[in-house]
Image (tube, rainbow, N blue to C red):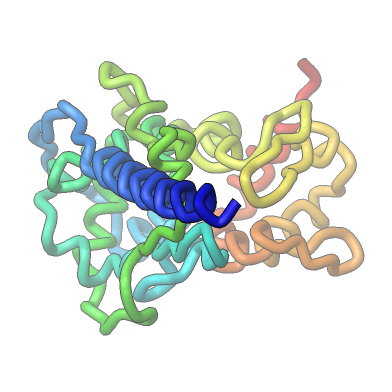
Length: 273
C-alpha cells in the first residue's frame, strides 16, 4: 500500500500542476484574443451645450459602473476582482475613433475585448449621442484612481475563461451594425435598446450572473407616472424599497432623464404587444 502511495502521489501532484498550468495558459490566451474591428474615422462635432451633452451621456449608465474615478464591480473569492477603470485617466489614452470602437464594439485599444460593459446595448446609440458622450468624457478633469489595482482573476474565473464561459461583449455585436445618425424625438424604444434591455426583458424575467431582473412591461403598467418617475430618479420601488443595482444605476445615471423622456420610456414599456 505504501509503495502504491509513493507511486501515485507524485503522479497526482504532477497531474494537478499540469492542469493548473493548462488553465492558466488557456485563460491568458482567452484574455489576449483580439478582434479584427477597424477603428474607423469619427468626427466628434456636437451643437449641444456642455450641460446637455453631459446630461445625455450620463443616461447611458457610465456612472453606475465607473463612478467618478473607477469602481470595483465584482469581488468574489475564487472568482476574481473585476474593476471598472477610471475613465478620467483612461479616456485620454484613446483617439475618438478608438473610443467609438470601444463603446460600440467592445474592442479595446490593443484589440482585445471587454466584458460586463453593455456594448451590445451601446451599439444602438445614435451618432449624435456618441458625439455628446465623447465630448463629455473629454471634458472630465483627471482624478486619481478611486480603487487600487486592476482586474484580477481567481481560479474559478480562470477556469471560466479557459472554457470560454465568460462572455466578451465583442462576440455579441455584429460588426456591420449601422446606428442611426440622430437620437429620436421619442426615446421610449431607444432607451430600452440602449439601456434597459441590458438587464431586463419586456415580458419575462431575465437571469444574469448576479441577479434576476423583472419583466418591464408588467412593471411599467403597474406604476403610476409619478411612481415611475420616482423609480428612475431614485431607484426606489413603491414604498421606498431599495432595488440594489437598479437603485445605484438610477441615482448615478437615470436621474438625468427629463420628465418627458421618462413618460416616453414608460409609454413604450407599458404598451400592449
